[in-house]
Length: 215
Image 1 (spheres, rainbow, N blue to C red):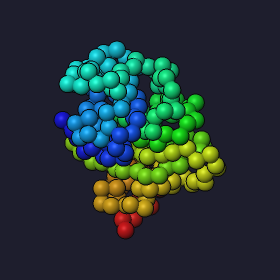
Image 2 (cartoon, one colour):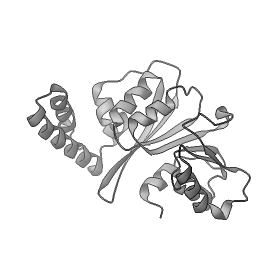
Image 3 (spheres, one colour):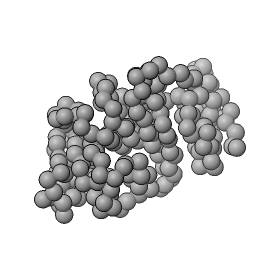
Image 4 (tube, rainbow, N blue to C red):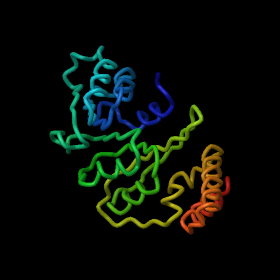
């Protein structure tokens, strides 16, 4: 049940911290946190009723736990006392959707983000809104690459370049075989797209991805 992605997300969470899981879906991240006694102070949210009901079924063994809460909410819309959370998890949503959710967020929680796409757009949003990217992970399982970003508000202007946005400032430094293979595949993808579209943006993306060299 617990895939590497869930384990790696949970690995960022400090013991007994207050956690907000936005877009909890089946509730597997809260379940992992509870089963491994990382924290029981969790609010699981979803914009839709059906996945929230499914999360309640997943977490039925903890139904009497007062610190476990379920809230139907569009992002932070129905969340009370947002500033009380030390960690905010937004996993399994598109980068643009995560950006929309975080648009008006200005508190100090550590953000654990797992975009399914548009990670460069999300990174640009984080930089432009003074969220420092403190760490990144790239997980490969079931033939799918998954990026996890840890970020926190810094309240100061953060410098970045196009490589930081496309490749990720931390992934560039880590640059193991999985990361290198991911960059290469993305480079070939955009190279092929450029052959059809002839758009400079696709050519530039291919160039950035393929310029990466494994250390």
